[in-house]
Structure formats: C-alpha cells, structure tokens
Image (cartoon, rainbow, N blue to C red; front, side, top):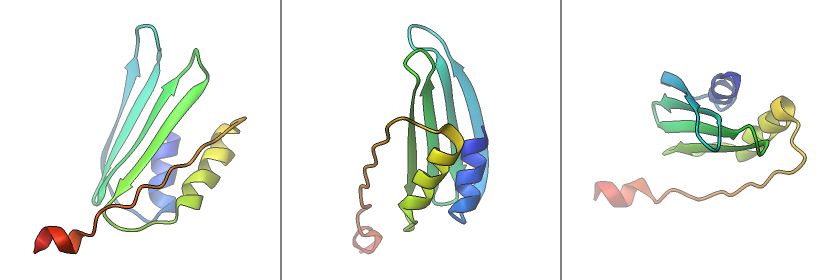
Length: 95
C-alpha cells in the first residue's frame, strides 16, 4: 500500500516489514501495517463507508502535519480529523 511506504519515507523512518490484508465480512476493505524500527504505521480502510483510519505510532517525535499532507494528497478526503497522543517519556521507563 503506497500510503505506508510514502509515510515511512516522508517521516524519515526505517521499515522492517509490511503486510497488507484484505478484510471481508460486513465492513470490507484493506488493513495495512508497516513495522518500523520505532514502532508501527497502520491504515484500515472501509470501502462501503468510504472511510480510512491511519495511525503512526513511534517512540521518536515526528511532524504530524506531514502525515496529514500525505493523506490529503493520496486520498483527497472530504473530511479529516487528527488526534495527537504524546508518548510517555521513555526516560521514566528506563529508570
């Protein structure tokens, strides 16, 4: 899935592997996951509802606007919502 590859490159992250899975049932679409060295990038699409949900999770900071710019350039959505959830300070975990 082009979104995963471009998102990883745009954010300057390194990919370990990616998997694209078709999803059937009442909400058909695709689910894509890219495992990156700092965590993961995912996308879940729902073709009947014409919706997609993207997630970039990383233990290093990145510029969220780059993800939104990519979403707009690839998918041309009518509406978008962005939620940024800061990761906890990893220094606290190492103590």
